Length: 96
Image (cartoon, rainbow, N blue to C red; front, side, top):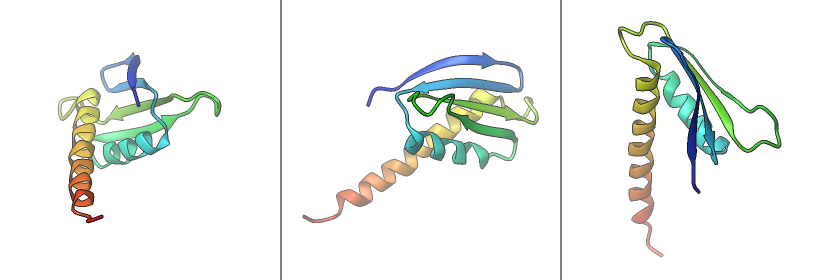
């Protein structure tokens, strides 16, 4: 699955971007991971229309001195990469 990111809005305390080619199985875990950050004020996924395959993600932080919204998103994506890598390793131990 090829995914692309399209930046829609970037302000001091918030960011809004679109992930083209990602469905809810990618977007929802990312939102959940973003919401674990105590500096996150708001994080949500927006699907403009049910027939449109891309989701928009909006993230706002409480204090940019603590962390910028784009940093929070990158950290959450890295955490998911680690978690799914661990899952892949566990699944690889299953004997056929």
